[in-house]
Length: 390
Image (cartoon, rainbow, N blue to C red):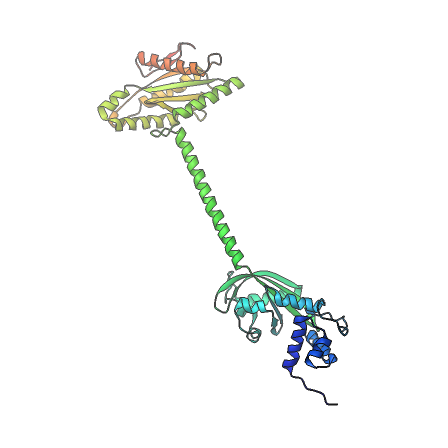
């Protein structure tokens, strides 16, 4: 009996229909007037030509009437064909298959054109780390063959010249006694753009937060700083007085206050102008800063008045410091304003009398120093009536 010759195109079309529709060999044979055994043989040949990852070599041919749907090879082929990631199969000789997503992602029109490429030709010549794509691709291929897999990020290039970032997994498996690599490529360029945008937003937010913190710190500093002298202002001194007197009472330690007032300061302003007067105030502030101790708190109380809060000091200690301050001012030449002097009043803290009384006592002592001729230090009479003359 004569044997009908069937073209390769006819066989391929019939096998593709079997894979695509899941029709049985008998059904296809009846439709196309072909012997069922021939259809089963063509399907088996197609399956045998696939790599091991798509085939079940231990499986027997499907019985008559059975469909390929649900078989491992068909399941893997469907996954291969429908995956949104590029899947490429290669051996030492290069690519021998890829799924449709590969052609779409890289913009390559035909499978034949793709199969003629070296893996490095899907990339720009140089990777971001400075390595040649050809060398780096071969290194990863060797790693995957030797260890079983290689996972890395890579910059690829589409046919239109557009570069994109991708996550690449190379996996080795055996088929027909030869090593085969499956390269799964996922386009992560959109994810990277979102990550970069998020990182940029975070950086901008951090910078904005730092700027706000810096502005808040500057504002907080401005709230407690005298703008002319750079010393603490009265608001800050009020806070320190309350805190230090509370600590002094709690820990049974002394604290004293010095009030200082420039002598005849109105004469300086009237004679040389307020600009010279401001310069004198700044100079006095500097002289006092150089003289007070690290534990002392110095500030401008208002106008030409200064205050020193002497931590851990009794009236005698504060009077000694005040006299050093007095001499520092007296001996300094203030340019146009010449030599000037300062008067000082001292009062220690007494928990039985309170903070307001200490301030009033220091102010009274200062008034007494002025009345006694200026350029002198007087301790409040409520303590000892001490007068430290000029």
